[in-house]
Amino acid sequence: MSLKIVVIGGGSSYTPEIIEGIIRRHDSLPVTDIVLVDVENGKDKLQVVGELSKRMILKSGKPINLTWTLDRKQALIGADFVSTQIRVGGLEARAKDERIPLSHGFIGQETNGAGGIFKAFRTIPVMMEMAEDIHHICPEAWMINFTNPAGIITETLLKHSAHDKVIGVCNIPFNMRHSTAEILDVSPEEVEIEFIGINHFVFGKKVTVNGLDYTEEVLNKLKQGLDYSPANIVNLGWSSTFIDATKLLPNPYHQYYFQTKEVLAKDIKAFNENGTRAENVQELEKSLFELYQNPNLNDKPKELEERGGAFYSDVACSLMNSIYNNKKDVQTVNTFNNGAIPDLPYDAVIETNCIISKNGAKPISVGPLPSVIKGVVYQMKAFEELVIKAGLSGNYNDAYNAMIMNPLVSDEKGSKILLDELLKAHKDYLPQFEEETG
Image (tube, rainbow, N blue to C red; front, side, top):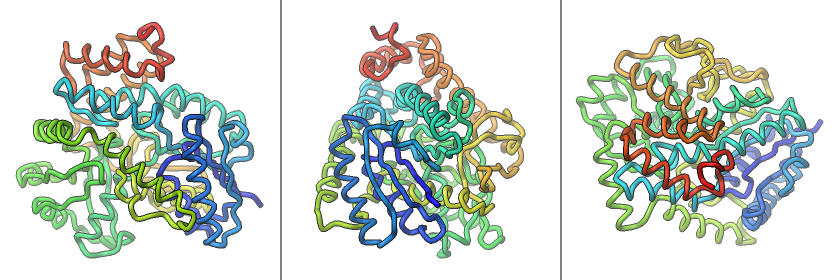
């Protein structure tokens, strides 16, 4: 019996992680075929990653046939799972998402603020086309989306594409759980965090270890400077007042919203001294691909952990494993709310703990939003809906509304300046905005 996984964005530096994850789970997830797919601009990287992946599989001794191609439609034939990890415009586009807002005194970040909006605008048309292909070529396949902004992209596909077997994944809940386990000196398998909110804006409501409540202990550790930030976010710490008052675990991305002045000052300083994060990642990627080309390398190099999305393969591969084996275990993913948070619409995509089975993700009821975060989560969800509307319509006013209603912009004149500059900078990747950028 065959089991085929297609990785779209296969030339990514992250791909060795997903290959490692598949190899490690092969006894329970007996993958027979992996196809790595990329675009013309990524064909050289695809070749390098493909050859490294083949060496990894050869070393493992697992009977997995791996190929790579630029023909997405051909690759999708017979797929059981399709993992998506694309970056439309590459790191050069990310650098513009960071550099242009920072040059005007706004947060410049790839999934938050003005940069996040434009990453979504570039990505939505491509992902919609991809979902259409999956629906017609391999309609029973599960689409596992890691492409950021993951919540927005997942909601776009679930609400507006023909394909409904879509689940979004993010490594932030994974990082929070593992770092919490580290500070409590227990194994990650013993830790459960009750998450409430949306992607990159999710809070930890309760922490248990083997069923016992450790929330207060973890919150006290946070006040002492616990760091569970990924490599792309420098932890600034949280004040005792913030932790004591909210009684919630913030995630690393919350610093953009609750420590905006400090983050902006830090990022502008780093921007002036060392360039943007994207430019730093380009250097890191260059060194990674030099490592990948070593014909003696047949393992995922440790240096990959310096990438901000490191370890996501554990999330993506665990999800595929649980669907395939109908495990009915609990994982944190992005999917329709379906009443798990009664304050939000049923068809809002949230990031929450779900029971994972052959039927996909079933959210576990987490109760109403705590009053302290209710308003801001409403705002963020409404903002996401504006981004989706604009990303689909290509209408200038829709895009302006998304920009001005983002808490990291929220400036009448500044919104227009950022919108106009970013539309011009990314015009080659914004077909839906042709009239605005022509």
